[in-house]
Length: 281
Image (cartoon, rainbow, N blue to C red; front, side, top):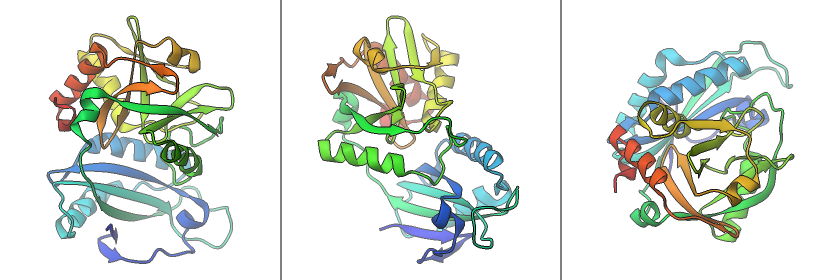
């Protein structure tokens, strides 16, 4: 059972006239709450700020952290391990697509119960698939976590039907982009690579943390580049990242399979040392 709050007050019914509901005119952040505190808060705030700038929205930075803390203090859920979803949408206007730039915003905060993944997933890895759903390229919201998620809905539904943990999406030119709920990394020889998200996809906060940690403490620096299915076929290791789970080894994608390798374990160790306890084996 989720709990929703709007600027500190509990709400039960969304306004059908809101721009977020009508047009997907807004952004959201899905934040891991651990021991009552938001994890990777700075990373989430940076992405939200960048998204607001690109969409012409006034970022609600002055009160957002305080509002989230108030919601966590008032909610009935166990905040030791749960999920917070912050929705920032353009304020209501007269009917129609157009609005002022920049526009004022409304904020809704939802809390959801959560449970840790099975430790065996971190030890033994998970299976994935290549999704048939393609992502549109050249989008002005590339990299952002906008409210427009229908591509992810369709691709994620493929995963549920196939019974796999995750699915990798591609664009119309067959470039690998990201998972339906994660970002992907491929290890080959001395290289660790993650797909470019300049054209489409979502730039995850855990992805950025891994890039930063590898740059500072890793044995290899992450390369951001265009990738395709051939990179999966020739990979030595594959792993995925997500704000809720940290990092998981990938052992299969369709006909391709990989071991849980040293580079993946190294990344998991870096995250565990940073405080991502799910990755501590």
